[in-house]
Length: 225
Image 1 (cartoon, one colour):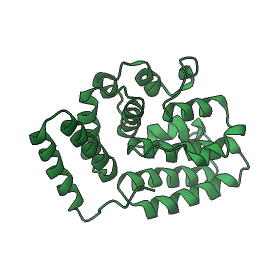
Image 2 (cartoon, rainbow, N blue to C red):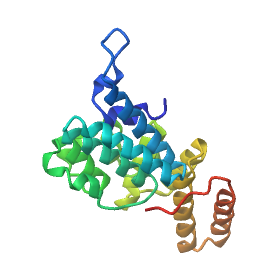
Image 3 (cartoon, one colour):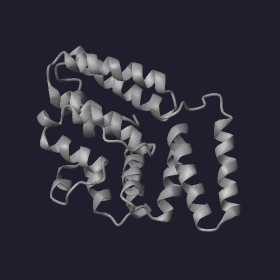
Image 4 (cartoon, rainbow, N blue to C red):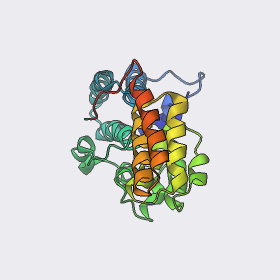
């Protein structure tokens, strides 16, 4: 599953992925995991309403445990989808839980905000440790197999001003391959603006035509919150 790796990274404990010989996890875990994964897919596909519904379901399930660490991971998952789509904010949902969040969750939040320290980078999931240590090259991103994680890493690179030119194209191609209109439009716009700033009107026009094609689709993305 394309979202399995993001679940393993920041979503729920490893017991969610337990083998069939182990006791089945409680319903709340599976329900929360499924809702969060569906919510990420909905957001990337441009369906803000469905994303909100799925996230509310996930929070309801997680709140039953009274565990702020799980709620913090859920909020980080939501924020990560926004970073993948170049929507940069302060992740207010996580900020409300930060006081009780474990160090790994705090490090991931700092990473999404583009301010993780070299010391805390060691607490990040492996793909993001490598991306954080890179010089912003597309090669480092290309080694990230999960498309969601790749887009998140690309968004962080752009947020920190480290994204090399090929990163823009790789991120747009990744979103296009999955049919995720929201990050695709965000990255195509970023490419077009970069082409315009570089004095490349023909390239900018080509990208604008591609943006127009995406906007013609039946599932036109809603405005970003």
